[in-house]
Amino acid sequence: MSVNPTVKTWGKSYGFAEAETGEVVYVHESEIPGMRLKCGELIFCDMERVAGHGGRFRGHNVSGPGVVPFDERPNAEERKEEKKEWERFKEARIGVKGAPPPKRTRGKIAGGGPSDKNYAPVALKKSAASPTPLETRVDPADGRRYTKDEFKACYGSFKQWDEAAPRKPQQPSKPKDDEKRIDPADGMAYTKQNFLSCYGGLREWEKAAP
Image (cartoon, rainbow, N blue to C red; front, side):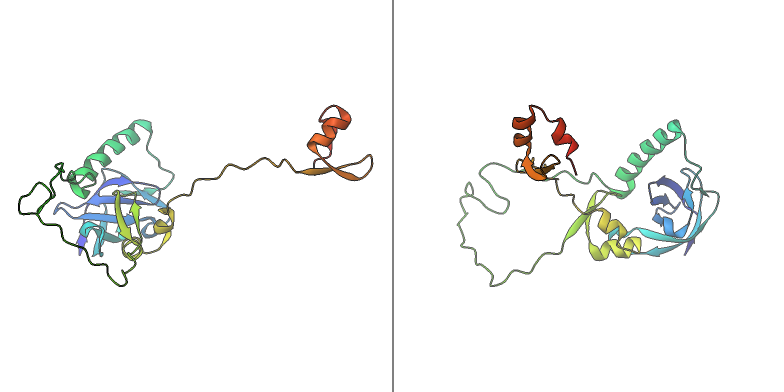
């Protein structure tokens, strides 16, 4: 199915466009090597529906005035306006914010609870073996979580899946109190405190650094 959608945003390696009929079209950089999309311009492409990702479409055979060389970057004012349009587009068409979580009432659970006169506690049965839940990661394009297969179906590779991996905090390195260095004076190894006690300073310690 061929459409002429209008570009709404372009990130580091992908962008979104919106067709007049309402479809949201995702365009990956692999479809336009060395090029990027220009916001507010039309593109010509074929649409392919992909699994997951809110029913969005993926664009193929992309061309048109909205496809420009990658070096043609927007200036600061244009980029600022692009970000505003992207925020409006995300909320209105992709639904990033979504519906607010349901309100909880103290002492009452939906469908019966301690404050419900018809409530009766029920013992929960433990299953013999619970299936391992599929790992999901947040797609920065819309702020929602998807499985690895859904990332592959939308982006055509696992690059975005790998980039969405949670980062582990770096552990601060501990000082090496027991580090030893060779003293050229006798060829023996000594600690920093040994150097300080012998020479009255750390000049020789620094010289002995490997």
